[in-house]
Image 1 (cartoon, rainbow, N blue to C red):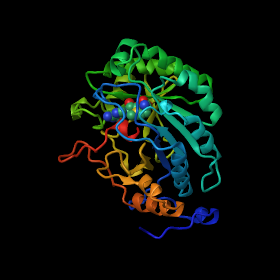
Image 2 (image 1 turned 30 degrees about the horizontal axis):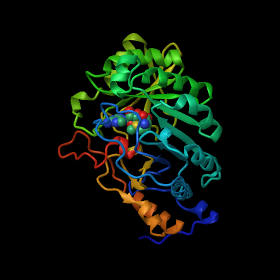
Image 3 (image 1 turned 45 degrees about the vertical axis):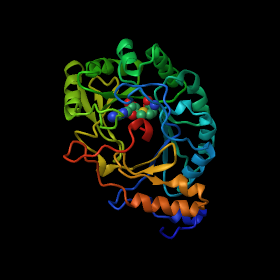
Image 4 (image 1 turned 180 degrees about the horizontal axis):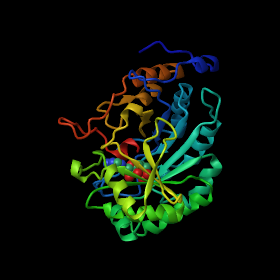
Length: 345
Ligand code: SAM
């Protein structure tokens, strides 16, 4: 293990930013706080099993996150599984709000959710200190949506959740839609109208080989270019400038100035070169890439009695080995050991 820098406030402030061996600064931590989910989206889950990995105590997530923040993380996204299912979520958020970045600023705190419990939790999340919520939604008509989630009544429930989040001020509200050809790509134009009508930013995501089953083929991916062309035929789009270099979505505004969409194109236009992310799984393993073949047992070290300085040294060492890029669609591509729901999207 590399020699650990002591973690007092002065040396933390002077610690070099968490940087990998490809020169990328890592400032965005995604933490899965459960791999349980109340939806069984057909492109994600086989529907046969639920949780596969243990959950940590909320205090243990907090301690690990605190060490990451001491190393330069500025943004935390809580995810899962379905993070709103996790008991203690609001307590965790209230504690995260008290942390400061190495520059002594507030952290950016976000949640990714399927929205099923958002109607009741939007105001509590906002009050606890969450800045932004991203809701996943793969169709704008109820029957298609419910065929995907395999939960009756889910469309209306999520719609109420989205509206509650917007009213609670969790804005700009982003809606993520994963597109699969021949399955829900008929929803593209409907989503463009939905974005304008509901005053939300809809972001289409190219489907990646991260499902529990074996659905993925290159042909099933609906690429960025096709999405832009299809929407533009109905509602002309203009490309908007990126807000920062590690932004995953390409942004487009509607030409009449009303509304915005985004496209996240990890397959057709990979953005690995600008990746600023690292993930912590619900059982406390570091994943340096969605497609990592190896995981790094941070929680195992905590449980064995490691000090914060030793945990920090392990994180620094692990991040240094972050993969240069993914190899989706290349010969010899290996699916990662965990699917998206068990990694944390
Ligand atoms: N339950 C939460 C939710 O629904 O947002 C958080 C976890 S979910 C795994 C996070 C996101 O990953 C969702 O937007 C989901 O659609 C997306 N996702 C799942 N499988 C995917 C895949 N194979 N390719 C791209 N995105 C995927």
